[in-house]
Length: 245
Image (cartoon, rainbow, N blue to C red; front, side, top):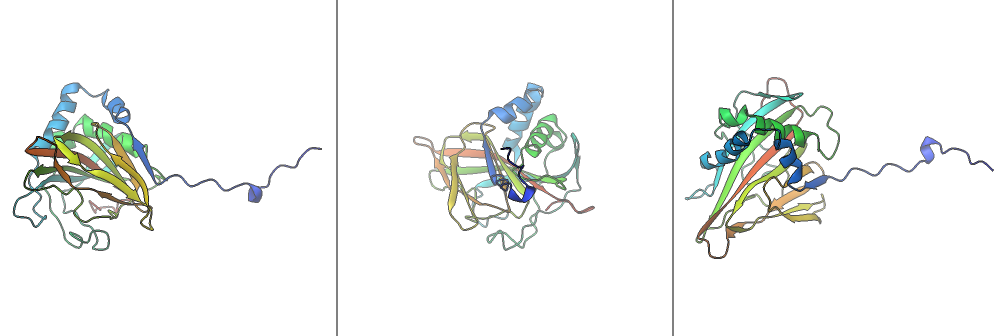
């Protein structure tokens, strides 16, 4: 007997794509292999020139930051006019509801081949539909810790960023312990834990389907201070003439 073909209504529904992806360093290292080594070195060295984050509310800054936004055009990044970074109070209970005007990315970084290679690679690895995702915000962030003061990569605690997708890329981890990344479902249950240790190691998440947090950092044993450098890329649908999120 020949069985009848399944009707569309009888077929099992496709499983939803997981709301995050964790990549080892090989993904971005391969993408950057086509970029001259001196331009990649220029890119990573630029974290040594980040101004203090003026919105922490602490006497001594422990976070340093630059931010710019871009329109995505095929293989090209169109830098948008510099503007403040804004998050709603509902997603950032510490700094939400405030226009935060960070220093922009340097021209060498914003127009360089390393950033372009990284962003285009990440855009191709979004854990969900990418239709209409034509804009990104790029954050360069350094968090420091000393023997007297820990650094807090996420002072807002478990949160969402208010975007469609967020990529978290480790650039440098030097003389620190801590900084465990944790993702949660929307009911607050942990779904993934990771300690990013290798440069270019990356987590890309669907910000609408998961919450995330990063534990504080402290100097490693025997060190007086330490640093953790991250590249964050927010992906979202843009509004013509409106840079940023």
